[in-house]
Image (cartoon, rainbow, N blue to C red):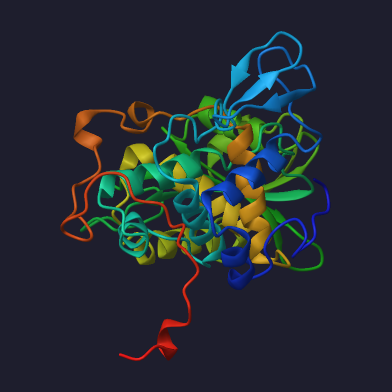
Length: 340
């Protein structure tokens, strides 16, 4: 959908969101519209045409195969009601700095912290659009360490910091910055930086870097603008690095596991690149479009090893555990006007 309209293709406000998606059936119908805007398309044979069965599944009119609406998406096999998923996605995309798993658990009354944590990580996993355009024009490129200062260490490349992150940011003329790309880097060797450059910057672009010698060996096909490092030579990457670290410390209290940092970098870039969006609800639409087009993400794929399992938190409320109940509720009859 190239040019969606607020209040037509996506909710323009929280009030509209609540009125649009008051039931799980409303949410499922919206997902069907996003996934198959021209009608049901069989995921097995790509045949256009079919009908909905009594159990909610779809049957292909060509060979009779049956599938569910959420099969093959990040919602595949999820026992979490769609109203909860939609509320989580709305909070995730429309709040300026996003939402932490603890906050999501409390607001939606999710009894299991692991469920809230996995929902957010599934949403983060879809935010990189396949085949997205690379950065172009004049692009600043640098690296920084994420994870906080270590006692006795100074300088952006001092060893001992947690994770090395590559940053590339477009410069706009005459002022300002465009899109950004971020990725975890194992080191600052030629092969590593060349791979980051080729993955994220269009050949023929002008690439501005600091004085690190290794950059001189990776600029084939690019125009290299090399400057001695300073706070004014590459303001774009310095600003992005500062915003990233502030966001991790504020929204997530700095409690980001190294193994999951790529997901948080994807979320930050998704927000930064859409910071001028005319309506925050548009981000909600884009995230759901990516979600229904993405392959399933299993919990075992999120937990890379037992040592990196999400820390357990007290259930909210204390008597509720496991998967949340639906946010769908009957219409209240103005309880504030009823006699006590």
